[in-house]
Length: 253
Image (tube, rainbow, N blue to C red; front, side, top):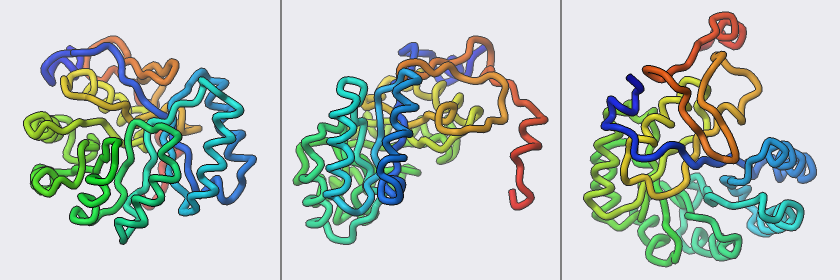
C-alpha cells in the first residue's frame, strides 16, 4: 500500500508547494535571477518562497519587478529570513518593508525564541519556525515564538514528525512541510506525509524535481502548476536509477 496509507490515510490528493528564490543570487546578478523565474513560469508554476538578501530595498525592488512582469503567475508563499536577525527590531522593520507583497507567512526571523516572540507579537501574518523535535515545539509554543510549525521529514522521518504535527494541532498552531532541498526520493516522502496530515494549514516547500538539474530517480512525484502528486502504487513508488546515483555521488558523501 502507499506510504500515506500507513500514516493514517490521505486527507487530500495533492500538496501545494513553492519554488525557492535565493536572495544571494539577486545580489550577484539581478537579471539572471529574473531569468530563473521565467524558466519556472514557463514550466507552469506560480508559487515562490523568497530567501531575503539582507538588503530590504533590493529585495523590494526585485519582488516589484517580478510582479510587474509575471502578474498572476507570481504568488509569494513566504519571506524567509533564515534566522539572520540578532535584534527583533531589525527583523520587524525588514518585514514591514516587504509586507505589502502579501506572503502567506514570515519564516524564521531569528533563531532566538525570546526574540522571535517579539517579532511574532508585532506581525499580522503567521510567523513560522523550523521545529525539529517535541522539546523545541513545546518551548516555542510556551514562549509564543511562532504561530506556525515548519516541519521537515529529515527531522527523524515521517513517523517521528507526525508527533510534531500533533503537537501543533493540540497547541492551536498552524503547520507546513519544509524544506526545498530534497531530491526525488525525499520529495516523495514529503508528499506522502503531506497527504496524510490533517492539520496542514499553509503551502509547503518541497520542489526537488524542479529545483535540481540531476536526479537519482527515473520516476518520482508528478509536479503540475505548483502542486505535487504522488506516483500511483505501493510504498513511495519511486525508481532509483543506479547509474544516475553513481554519476552524482561524490567521495566525501
